[in-house]
Image (tube, rainbow, N blue to C red):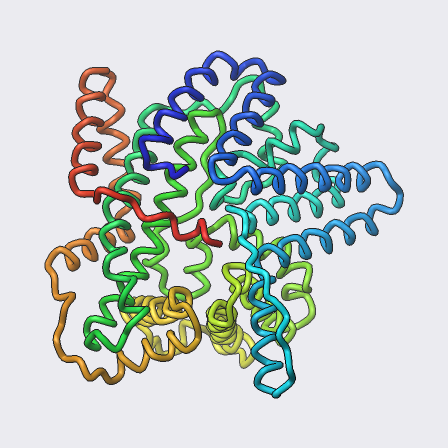
Length: 471
């Protein structure tokens, strides 16, 4: 069930109507949230629901053992291995099985075993990450041992289960058990929901049409078209995922939970390091705290730091999808971050003061270089295979087709709108908050109706699924 659909609207109206009267009854409200989350998840598949419930119960038993048993490290390791295997089976089995079959065939070794096609449950990557972080936090005793209902609500919380943001257990439990839930302002919720709808329903749906066929059949498009398609995908993945985050945060506000900032105008970044502080913030912080730092972080010298960066980003790339292209995307970002760090570490090593260096890279050039790097790296993210990515790049360099199909003023207008959002989004948000803060119900309803009507008129008849649902 997608957020920007009439089906979800009816579902949430019913849920919110009940939530209003239950919020202050802490125990009852927790049971209500758990039941709501399980019902929501069941709309995708009851088989997926059984897996989610089973995983939740098993991991809760491991959490209890970590708190109550003196051999807590063994239970932590067992829990981490179990979840890696769980994620590996449902997300990476097909990849490894097909890869093994190809290798054996290339070596002329007879192999005719049947490869099972296992479908990954919706949101499996996200809820496994929540489970893993909880195991580590439990081992570190960051909070008291939760009850089963509390733990189950954390793992299954429906606004975040399909594509994040990845909330931390300590903060989530604090809000879950508070009698006074997050005291949101109505204008905050309105802006978040309208922003999410505009990004997903209008902008993302429009850009979707420019990003599918060019990556499947790049030979049918000109070099200019392929460049425009690459830029379109850069914009698409941002508005699609940040749109989901806005909607998830708006819904969470209504349910009494503080919104989690997941994007902060990422395409205004002047370096790759800055980009990852602005893009998918909850994942970036998760990779830092539960992968990069445990690997050693920067504690064992610069060379080890660079290796840890490469490993973290390569694993982060593979987490996104079971394919060599995702690993390459991660490695490219790892190399980029390493170069970024070397450029900062080098002046310290040779004892040069930055103010005495000639600043060759002006902010405009830094931005252009960073955005170009990101756009080209997204090609590996969108391409179905490494060969498809190579064909796409080859088409950009040299294409036999000189007819430009994407030379559309509407596309350029969307680029401008997204550019303004990335450089002035915080200012637009403040303006909208002040507009919707008008203490007149009829004016508020009129303004919201006008915005929603505009979004629906500009949007398509059918909404493509969220990109991150497949991860």
